[in-house]
Length: 429
Ligand code: EPU
Image (cartoon, rainbow, N blue to C red):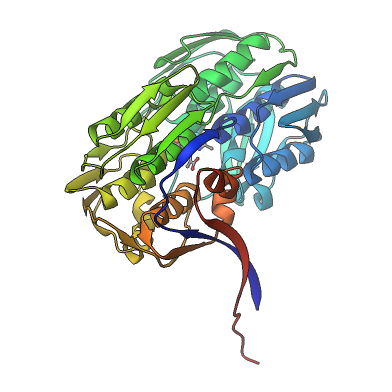
């Protein structure tokens, strides 16, 4: 028998109270990679206690850094010459570890990082990372499952157009360009708040960057950066998850630690669905009195509706009155978890990157399986609107992105538990 963790949630609760969100996973991981750009101790504060952050710590340790975690801070001691290899055993667990490519290339002139491969939300290419770094003068090859980049004569600033505002490609190019000779311009750059956060940290370290938060980033390379302390921006996706959960359960919750302007379109969709949203200073309140009305949602790069909130959008649609059309434009496999939603009684049909949902008054509790971080959280939340108990398996996915998920749910009034169950294993004996 194998032992696995599950989350069991009893449907019917109305979420009420206050919840505090800490730093964004998708910022903290990159800020830890930014540390590689300066010798000495960098402190990244407001770091979430999630598996991905622990794995990133290990990636940095294997690169020769000293890494410790203390009360929400990551203390990273970077040597004069960090290592230049990231192996598959860690990269496959944390696709984001590909973000060490840019900083190590800039610091060491050579880097060998395992190719992360696809995952449950889609194929996830690296072509724009590679093309951008090549424009800065790197020679890039791939062999035996690794991407190898070298720039023996250093990197040189260049003009780079991204085909699509890729978050990861923007970050890798940015982290390389800050130490390149001359000026780099990244056009069609990603504009996510997490990119702005990285730019702010880099600027405090001594980098020269203009245009953070716009689609053109101009970077004037400097010779060296200094280590600093920086606090991670709040996690808008976790904040958005609570906002949708509140609307779906006709609850009343104030979410602290996230700027509502970073969730503008998502919160506006909730208003269209009938919620009352009160924005505050680094917080917002969501209240929903009646059954949500159906709304159509289209995911797009920031400032569009975030793809990471797609499972929550589908959950809302599944319990709304009327039909909704939900369109996913970022990841080709994002609807993979829809079959699990159907197990909960949701009436969802997908065709390519569209999902048509006919809302039902209540879903029906069932055992389901998380397929990725956001799908996992989305299934737990859908379970709040189901009769009986929903048991979500493969919760290690949720642990990758949601610190304190179960205790936060309990504090908001949900009957919820995390349990270890045994599953049969099969062999030929
Ligand atoms: N793409 C390419 N080629 C590239 C780069 C991207 O084809 O060189 C494609 C991807 O395959 C994907 C799309 O472009 O279809 C968007 O990819 P992007 O590079 O913007 O995303 P990412 O950097 O891989 C980050 C977050 C994701 C989030 C996306 C979009 C991290 C660690 N991950 O991924 O977060 O969904 O941006 O906002 O920052 C999550 O947290 O659960 C998560 C998946």
